[in-house]
Amino acid sequence: MNNALFKDIINTIRSLFGSDDFIPLHIPIFSGNEKKYLIDCIDSGYVSSVGEYVNKFEKIFSSYVKSSFAVAAVNGTAALQVALQLVGVGQNDEVLTQPLSFIGTANAISYCGARPVFIDVEKTTLGMDSQGLKGFLETNTYVADDGRCYNKTSKRRIAACVPVHIFGHPCRIDKIKEVCDVFGIPLIEDAAESVGSIYKQKHTGTFGLLSIFSFNGNKTITTGGGGMIVTDNEDIAKRAKHITTTAKVPHAWEYVHDEIGFNYRMPNINAALGCAQMELLDRYLANKRELAEAYKNYFADTPIEFVCEPPACRSNYWLNAVIIRDRTERDAFLKHSNDNGVMTRPCWRLLSSLPMYEQCETFALETAQWLEDRIVNIPSSVRL
Ligand SMILES: Cc1ncc(COP(=O)(O)O)c(C=O)c1O
Image 1 (cartoon, rainbow, N blue to C red):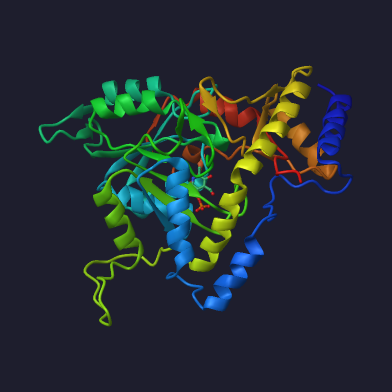
Image 2: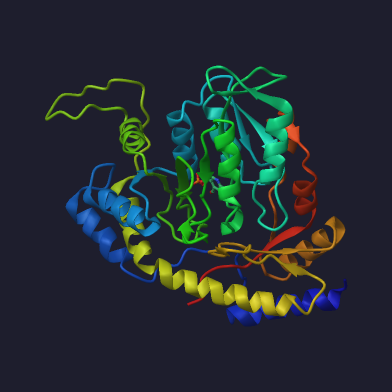
């Protein structure tokens, strides 16, 4: 690979974004009713965790993803922590997840006092490899008389499994669910990045017992900061609402809290943004799909591989990604693009290699390491 190719890539990205200025990786776009709803929210005085926009955002969101319930939270990490607690993850449990993900996935597990166990990912989906998951469970765990799964070596309970829909590309969630069901392991989807992504005709985040989404400023749609817990289980949804609202028992004037809850409810002012952004979501998804198509066509004639949506999926193409020959070439491209005002980023360092998680159990992480060495994210914002 040579400098001429790198220059050509930069020129192509510049022409796709029609800009000679700095091109960021992903910026929020507010092109609808955002200001109107924010002003309405301020005028009403309901800017905090009580207000109609929060309830409305939950309704719109659950109906968009076709789940029975959605509970809004302050961010995706808090939503995941609560989701884990709701399936009973606690002190000294283990939670299966993937090493290729944002730090929030592993941190939420730690907040519950549990430890992540890292299972490899697949090259085609970037998500957890169901065969690797099966291999780990068959070799290293057993199902006890209580019907729960335990790690043979550590003797800890495997209390949940959290696969991730990376960059919005759906993982093979039905296969992962099949394996989890055999071993009695609750499935929670980390769908933080995948609003608008469909797997076999169903929205991501509707396969597990619960799932979570993020509306951070870098996501396809944003509430500034925000998250959502999604489930079809009414009891779980009620508990989610209760413990994200300080476990306050409804009463006309008294302050009674019946357990240690969290102040995790999404504020109304953030939900106002969310309601406006939901009105734009389908337009943004179509816009991002056009960009992905243009990248796909361009990279087809280069030695660089563009990461396409997996078969049977419709990805939201949140962050477009390419796979470069090796780590040396990857670093050369990162330097060239960032030096030339086009923001690109490597994939996250594998969670299993970070100081807080390097002692955690891993199961054959060859593909994750291969991908970490090669993936680069390229500008992916909605183009107006
Ligand atoms: C895969 C993944 N999980 C969890 C999170 C946490 O979401 P938040 O940043 O809203 O806490 C994010 C993103 O930000 C993410 O990308």
